[in-house]
Image (cartoon, rainbow, N blue to C red; front, top):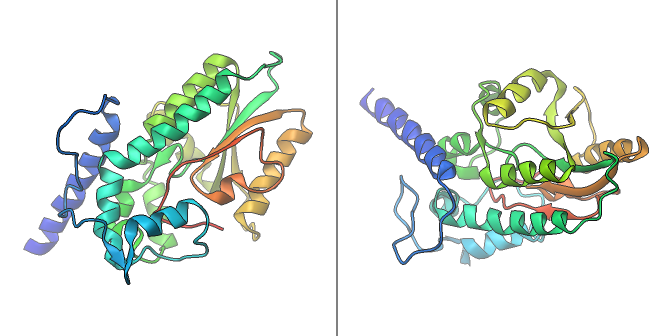
Length: 264
């Protein structure tokens, strides 16, 4: 019983650490020790049978490592440190800075036809409190427990993505959410997005219940419908390559970091 209580306190603590880290304003780098994973010691880069975990993560982000099911168990500490420390936020900020620079340089028609596609999970909202409780991707995906978490509506905002979202609205570009979440999760997804400060999107596109094909087929098909409806997809951002691959991709695509899981 004491062990269960201690585990519960640790899970609560990691959720609080994640939330407070994301809520903090981005600051200039100062010569202080970086924030580290709050629950585990920093163990260098870690390794996967001799392959450093930072190299493994790079292979994932470059889409060279595909169809993997779990993060190597030996890399759990490394990924916890990466996700809850400064590094993940910095990597996301670099992507968003580039996206904003691109958006600000667009010559818009001004007739409301330009849209920007956003994924939701690990792009607009973060499920890190769930993954902190389930080994930072070292355990096999459990659809039942993950869906229970989604239905809580407690996913956290990813502030860098929200910064891009708000900038696009100010420029006259309409955000469209395109998610692999299924249609039966529409109400909780809307509530979660609103609770985390998102507003003013043009459309929320969810996957039909029972859809059997790949994420690439589904998402590219929905983007094609937008294009056929007269909209111009000027940008597309997601955490998975399957969010941004497949015709039409959009005027330019942006890939956010996500070493926690793979969707093909």
